[in-house]
Length: 332
Image (cartoon, rainbow, N blue to C red; front, side, top):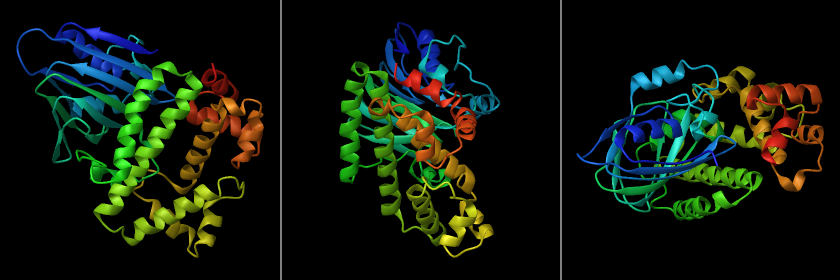
């Protein structure tokens, strides 16, 4: 358990909120006493939180974003005490937050849009840009926060979905709502290794819901079509150690320069996209209790990283710890 705490006044709540997520300003919505509670746990950079509180507003301001971006080491969020779930995140990283409203009503404002939050509604927001989240009555909600790098969609494309009700008109949205509700109840009872797998599965389903929303909103342009085609090819060939920008370009009958142009604005280069996906697969397998007998080097080789020394260095650069140490921590 990384954080389970109750605030009995608004000053305490302000510190608690920033400790749990990214730095936030808070404003009371009524005079008098205040009470709020947060239960938050970190599952390999996916933070799952249950929040219940009296009416208030939280604001992610440009000045807080600027200060957060300047942070270049692992830091605690807000108070620097090291007690919150947010203390596990890397400073300056960009995150998505997905909120599932359980009780009460609220309003989310970001990117010039606003969406009303009612029980059962799902909404996404981006910590790298300003937003306001306000509640005018007592409420409770589940909030998932995860790095944008865990979502295999261009950040500029996902921006179309902030402050909208995602999945409301699609069966996938109902499935995501049900899974988040069930995961929120089950995660505190599961072992860390199983919790990591379940939290990762929820993020994968949310990514699918977002992709479905984007495809329903507008037909993708040629560049988006090619990006989707190429990233699917990358995913299907991660085990090939010869997977490079050159081989990808050749497989799609284009120049390497044209390939790189397709990835402009996605937040990733072709090579970093390959690395990110390979490390994500390795993280998943290393945290899988059913694969505990598979050697670390074999897992790296399975996903195209056949040189054990290179795999260890790359994994440590991305994750922050060597693969063997990560496995021990995940399977505790």
